[in-house]
Image 1 (cartoon, helix red, strand yellow):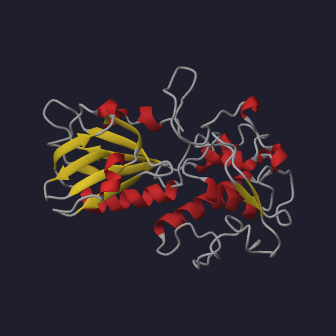
Image 2 (cartoon, rainbow, N blue to C red):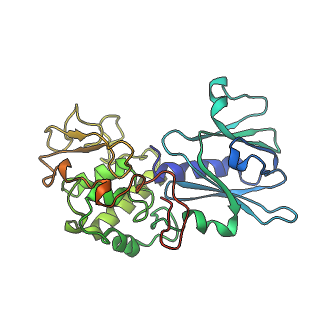
Image 3 (tube, rainbow, N blue to C red):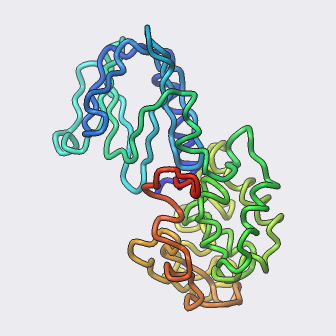
Length: 302
């Protein structure tokens, strides 16, 4: 699943490809936006907050600058095609947006989720509920620590997956950070050195996003199969001690309890029986996915 570093790198690629170009034709293929039109607007650039992508467009006569919000979830992607090139037929049913640019290229948004088009000055309505993001200029580690400590009984991996606490950390980072903290993934977050955890998470996410060859490498070795400490290593074993790596399946429909890898030897503490379930107040979607609309009592989106 794309994580914050994945979406940040996508935004930089789209900036290189699209920024400064005029949209000559747009075609939204989703009912909510079917009548909206971006033609005549210029692509100003892209921003991210956690796993959320914000594509900004200039205003046009009578309309303010606009922002297109999208979420990749598990399967979304963007494709920019040279003039005269066509998207493979098998992908056509999954196209949710087409932009024709002034240089003859076309941009396809494939399997995009949570599409919203709002005035740019209303972006906060879409992402304002999210926690601090280490890849943003307004990163606030103290606020991240405060939010992670809000419920000290929450299992560590569940706390890390909650985008309202820290935005951009997905399952890979939650598993690897638990390992590097030397505790079971289900250790109550209140029993962990949260300041050190936040510092480490920010350093790793930035390194992954900005350093060539370091994308989602947590061990320092980019060699495939040697790039993670425990994630995906149930056959190879723990990269540190060589002992067996355990894996716990996800809870279907509950994004707060994803598939989890850990080394019982290097990570003492509670087992998966300590998972937080929906009956304990964590609802499906608490770590990501389709958000609720903001209300007076809830900020909603993940």
